[in-house]
Length: 480
Image (spheres, rainbow, N blue to C red):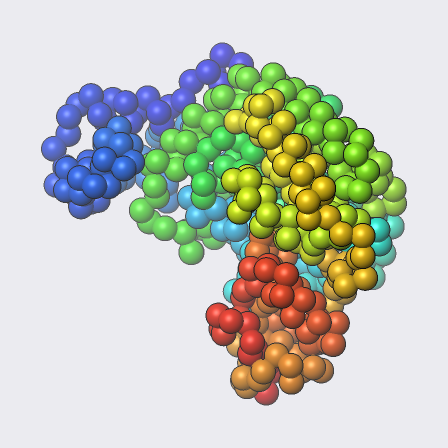
């Protein structure tokens, strides 16, 4: 633990500042002196370390000194063999992870409720997805996790697949039995990859679901910025050593920046140190706040703040730091509650979908702020709640009909159609609500009446629907 008290990149940047270097390199703001409004807004301390790669500060594309040391400390903290600092978010980490494991023509088994970054990787690489539909909770209307039996069947029916991809946890907090799935995948000579964008805290808290590296995963993409305290867009890709570090780095550098942000990287270094040293106490408090909020909300009736109570075939475990709240029973779509909380109460939750909201509870939250959220939800129910729910869409997940691979569909000859007239065509682009960024429709999938109805309803309720070339999502590219 003593080594985890050290942040090598932080110390290198402190030394850089104390040396009062005269910069004749980029960035052009020259430690803030060339852009005073930016310097005043972000602070001189911040801009003084928004610097370029140099020998004392190492280079993210080919780390040999302080970045390498910071990455190794992160690997040890997360129980991995290697880690890679990512400065283009976990979206880049997920894409790099998949492209490191599979190439054009290779099969990869994955749940369909993956983030768009996973399907982006298939578009770029030409790998072929074998989608497995997650379980569905009909009351909550949400996709759940993957059952071991469903994954086993997919593996048995596709013995030539090269990898299995899992969410741990899902956006809502649902965890699958990843240890059993990973063990079976390995027994069939398949790599096991995990998207842990929402699972940083699993590595440091107590009484948490099992994190991927402890379960034996070959690689995992982890968003430190979501629940670990680092700056937005900073992330870590973890590796067990099954694939060589050189190969993974080569894949990252295919699309990664050659101008890695030291602000993002040092935030990873500092946050790793904080988590390794203080993580248990931090997440003990987080769990206590989330459990309190859930208990209070459920005591009123109407709302359903769900957690361990939904365990079953498709919910092996639940991440209780996620305050996922079903709103449909009070007559409001989740996105409607989301908008009311923001516009009327100045409370910003993570997202609202068609039937639920999600509030992320993390290290920066206090009991006072939890009370404010809980009280606001009670008022929303009293003032805006409705008894008639007949006009509300009752599910969040639409099972896809796959007709072509993502890459073939994305690059196919296309024609542009009004969404209303696209039924039975094959989509050549994405449609999704953001957040959470899970595609309603991905390239290569058949457009059905249910999908068209879902998109129209989501737009009507105020969801941010995106992914199409048409910014208004009234038209869509389909395979000609």
